[in-house]
Image (cartoon, rainbow, N blue to C red; front, side, top):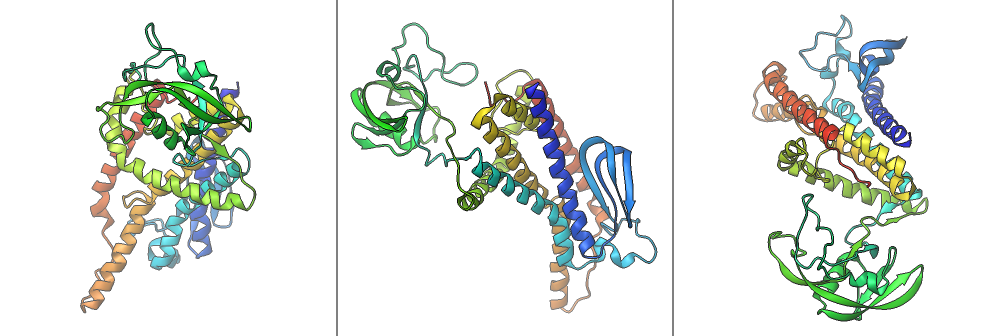
Length: 415
């Protein structure tokens, strides 16, 4: 029941963010005197509507998005009534058209920042992985000497003949934080990994913090074969000491009302960077989506549809606790930032495609004026229709593939 509630709650939150996206377009267009004839949440048959002034507002039967109708979106549109020609969007100055078309993405960015701020105040924001303390998630029952992985790509489970886990035998447990190994400070998880792997096999002292109190444990390091930490050559193996632990994947920290502002902005910057990186790597992720349909392991860092995101949101709510709340809010914030960035890509029919054409026209007219030539006028949208249809076809196919993978073999962030 809790899971279903979480799925519905996340789906409603996504629908609300899309509705606000369209509201951003509508409000800026109205502010600059353009004509907006419709604002609807959903698609398909109209369920309910009312008219206020020249705009019809309402709900439609299929809750899969929303739209607002600004007359004269392009010179091809014939929805401008006699006498309203000067209110068409395509006739407006470059600056105003840019503001109206980018307002949807700016709304998503604002929503993402608000969600991150709420997260920073309540559940907490994840600490930068490079600055995350070396906090233990669990101590393993054994140490796998050679880097042997199972069908899921994870280190294989323990089996007969594996040496017992030194960390568990020494009493290291969930929540302990390693602050030094053999006298060498380990302020972060990456530092702890490097120091442990470089320490010669045998007994070594581990300074830890447990429930706020410092302690010292002696742990027997075992020599293993592992891929380099650099990750540059994942097929290479090198000698490395190990004690058999998993570090906590996410450590969160809450902030006060003032401190949360800067931290939210910083984390949003990380999300922006991650979004561009993810989009750049997207083509290489498509084969995994196809493999996932046949039951192979799903890449947790791969693309996810609204369906998959809603399922993860449901898992987050049903799991409860701080981790669930953080996952729900961060996933929703990240999705808003992703939609905002993606929507600004210079491809029709995205808003970014229209903005690119607007500024192309502006630059082309400026260059013509500098050369003493006549203004070349507007771009012929009719010539761009084949490219627009191709983009719709490609994005539509990828969306269906991702949705299918999310239904058949969904990403699960919670056990």
